[in-house]
Image (tube, rainbow, N blue to C red):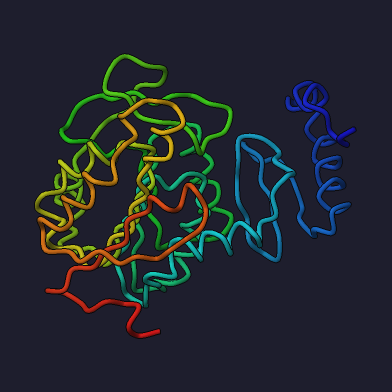
Length: 280
């Protein structure tokens, strides 16, 4: 039986019970040989070797080192940002990738971390705060094809929440990347990292100016989710590939084995840089 049952967690995850829940959650991860510390400060945080990641719940089933290594493999193997780079982290979630990107771009670089779900955005801000990510700017918006209100689902697991253009659970401001970059005075993007659960089909229609000023793109497409659910909203790989190649990008095959990673699209703009894998 788990050390912390779902019922016990729901009973303790409230004022007066969180101190005990912090102790139980920390004990659970340490029984697994994990040196992680779990505590509450507006949302739940896990700390391991000086790195912090926030979440809605005291998620004791994950190993922060393993999560960071997985994120590095899938998002920074193709192109690892360098000092001074400008990175757009679209679908930043609770900030796991933002931690890696912030460290990579250094004090002269900049990371714009966009997260649509308000509660997940709160966790993203807390991750940035505890890690001291001063070069990361979190923004609570959804990238879209035009400036309008969209909606996002409200699942228990933040990673699966998806945008809808019709009435839904949580209303979110939808913005185009072109307009956002104009407002932020960003005239170039070194790396565009995007993982937004099918809404990439909307986002690409709002970045027709800035895509030509982008050097590298790493975009998670979700055909596997369309296969699983029967909802073709998630079938986006061909759309993304066609969009990038129409703007002169060259696609790079990475060959990841995970079902969800096979649909990732990696590409570079040869007018701005060469294939980054040629340097490895």
